[in-house]
Image (cartoon, rainbow, N blue to C red; front, top):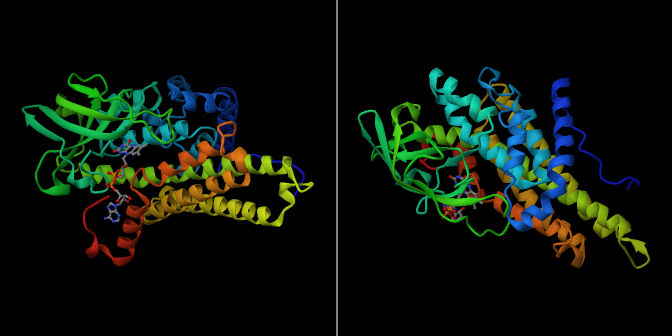
Length: 394
Ligand SMILES: Cc1cc2nc3c(=O)[nH]c(=O)nc-3n(C[C@H](O)[C@H](O)[C@H](O)COP(=O)(O)OP(=O)(O)OC[C@H]3O[C@@H](n4cnc5c(N)ncnc54)[C@H](O)[C@@H]3O)c2cc1C
């Protein structure tokens, strides 16, 4: 062990512009995010003002085309920004990832007119997005969703309930998957619904184990009218649009998990260097050094895995299997690493005076969102088994 404490992650970045971007993000974190993270998470405060600042700084549209207000950055750069944000505060890192997920449908499948009309405000105009796939009765089996959209002329009327929506009740726009036909996954269509649409309301936020600053709520659609001009892609294409977004979104979750694990390792490392037992700093005990070595190795392996998947995506190659692997590995690693961080800190780790217990509570949700880790295994196994064995689910 050297005698200097945790250092910023030494990142491999493809361009000078990307290096400047990471420097900008680190500065913004130090000034605007890290100082308030613990207190605001405890109070359940969502930092809406931070998201406005991120938007104004060009950090809410990084992987999208500059033509529409995006940052034109490769995924490998965007994900490393996310990792830094999540290490400072998961509510912010995951929030940026969800916002990016919510923009994916329109950016990838919207018409040129739709993109020109909506994307600049979504990517850099201060708006916050949400992604609405899950429902009370359909989580992992997302294709069984029941929220219905019925067409009358040029208007669709949406009725139903969405569940577990990150930014539910505070988002400015919702990308909503709704049933427009009865043929399972092929009867789903995507819509871009404004947050202030009449008939749209949110339940009280869920009372969660962690990420209390990030509101998660049910959304009720009670006769919400959406013009056909806000339909994304073709009728019946909504489930494909939802899954395409999730492939990319899972990489975002993987990067957030690595950031969270890195924060936990850094915290534990600082503690064990300082704390003495049996007349020696804890960090001198080999049993603990082995734990630290395992934690660091899992973090490096996770980072390498999500970056390898991102580079496939950047090269225009298929990356769905690798994204599922990265989500699975990185979030399981984050759960182990954050649990070990609490253990390394003994009783102190179990108190809210240190962030380790919060990291551990936050890691849990990453094994659940955007397809549970059981579902990631199903996705990976389907790729291994071949296309003919692929049932329709996430
Ligand atoms: C904090 C938070 C934020 C979220 N944000 C969003 C959001 O913004 N938008 C959105 O649409 N959704 C969101 N979700 C929902 C999330 O995607 C679902 O919770 C997740 O997909 C699991 O669905 P479920 O909770 O209904 O669990 P279920 O599908 O009921 O699963 C319960 C358990 O059974 C397992 N399981 C289910 N089917 C199988 C199978 N075939 N084989 C093996 N195991 C199986 C699951 O892995 C899980 O362990 C969020 C959830 C949380 C907790």
